[in-house]
Image (cartoon, rainbow, N blue to C red):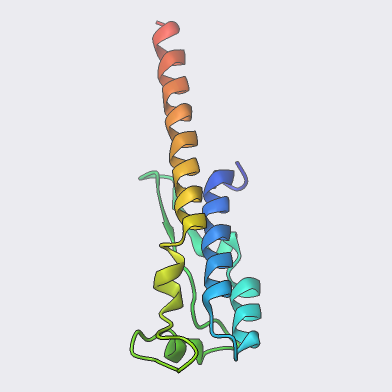
Length: 122
């Protein structure tokens, strides 16, 4: 754990960030670079240690590329791509789903290990 955030949760955030950068419009290489540089796991993950929950937020229009909010609209269309909506699609990619699956498996193993330890200690 780094600063209270499980490392595998950081991997989920990185998968989302990478997917969003790949799905961002080709004409705006700056947008892809800004998404990668601004969306660090530490900035994306909000960890609440009291309730033991986490929220992962992807910033699709980071500083220096605020126009990303217009490219993210599901109504933006160009002949080269039917639609963008890249931030929504980033959460649904195979890489992201695999990272989430790995995270939940690791979390399940961690919980099972804690339960075994507490049962054995009694």
